[in-house]
Image (cartoon, rainbow, N blue to C red):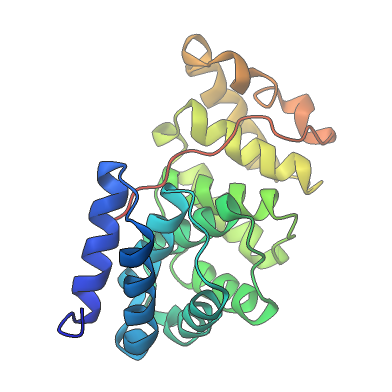
Length: 223
């Protein structure tokens, strides 16, 4: 294990998660120790994929590793790509880990800077994660991601639509008129494809109330 570089450790965790296999306790402990030793070498993709792997396997990282990794994430946030942002927020929400205030600010700033690069899954995972963690994003971030959603609304599937509506409803955020029209239109296009658990959060009336648990998480993808 001492010979592993940062990318090697992350690749092992990613591979286990992709295969749906849980490392044994000894290997998992060794991987986490090595992560701590190499954390200053972790780049944005390494951070996002590490958190994604733990969340996908429903494993809670050691507290020391988690806090160190999140501190590193704040320092690296200017280089995070939309998928890495979405994966990170999805993972933290899935694990029930609160986003520290300094990380919230860093995420918000980065989302605003690269909002035009977000795809539907990135937007949905980001909104959904904030909704699950009951963290209200700042107004500019909501506006930028809402505008991004309107531009690419035709790419939104049922799960994406459901998760965005869930977040807006649970956080009691009033959507822009443009977003509401776009979501209503795309929901109508996708109406026949909605699953029963997605229907509760599909209707625009849902935005006026909070319906905990509707929709559920769209599965993030490590990369």
